[in-house]
Length: 250
Image (cartoon, rainbow, N blue to C red; front, side, top):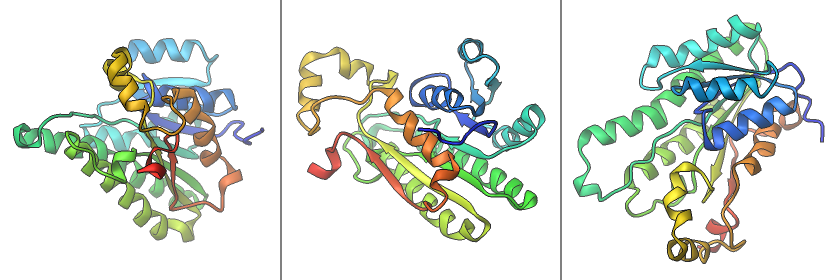
């Protein structure tokens, strides 16, 4: 399927691994130019080298609000335009909530909620000024729909991102700016490596998933491409579960 992404420009955060890397690669393969943002420049440079100039690496610490907003200017300087941002980067500190310091709570909400909000606002301001449509894709989690024990802070942050998506979609729709959420379930990423390596833990986890397997990061790519493309111009404020049917079963 042609997603009509040729020469569009997309910023992807957390592009050095997992779902962010998969999204960046899928967008580039469909003709988009991608500003791939993360802190691991060596990985980003290797990613860029594998995609013949369609991916540009850019170092960004999401804990720095000014640096996050500057991603929009960086895309404009390097590519001359901006059409979409994918707020993928996030942190997942698990553990007993009673034992987590206040600093952990603040850090999770800074990276998982404040940074996406700042980037969305900067992108929307550009779209407003240009009088052009735009797409903002937030990467959430099934935990944002139903909180999970030992992931209280992460669940709360992804729940906040879901509500932010809904609110901004209504606020910006008249400007033709679409805001949607993709909520992955269990995927084979670095975050899940310990689980995937333990046969007993993995078997227990898979029993909760009707499709009886974990997702592979490239499976997120086509959905991100669709939401970034003009083919989805009548979709905003939506949350797309990609979890093998897990939440439908609960």
